[in-house]
Length: 260
Image (cartoon, rainbow, N blue to C red; front, top):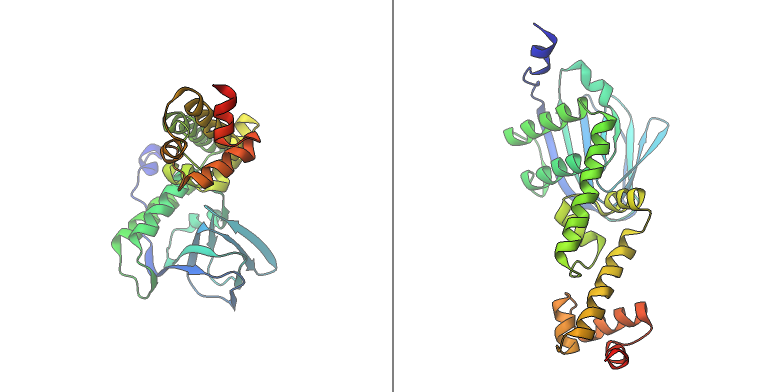
């Protein structure tokens, strides 16, 4: 078999033994334990400390942790956390190269969202779910062929898509979380990538766009302040007025009076 043929071999299918999708409260702990199979954790939101033997591994929103068999580990949820946990068996020796923390990225976030849709809430054992096995095989296959340049390309595409969405939204995207949901990634990862590329805070840029749009509408449209607030996605005129004044030192009505 040639190297090219080998690279297109069908990946070995993991045998999923257990899966769980759940929420953990801040401060909840899982004590020391080990088992004879692999375990993979996806943190959809929150911050979690995993203790592996004598090492603490911090996992945040959008990140993964692959725990090998027979490794003593414990878990401490440092904030309210949504997570997916899968325990499985896989005979492929190459998987040992992937153990440990997987950093957040658009593709891995996409896989995480697939798992959160495939796996029902709660604990399931045994877990005879072929779709979960196939998706797990795909994410392992992706991670095994991971290269740094791939992350750079993904990061570039991510912040470019973020800019396109912000331009198209024209001031109606209210938060980093709202934008991250549309981009199918974690808010923390999106903010970090945006700041690394553009040298500015993403939340600050979203606020800048919203205030710029609000100023334009107050100045050039004949709409009532309440109508402008509604078009920008505010729940009511009072929250819009507080937001506008916090960024301009003027109420919307005072701003309109001073500019018309």
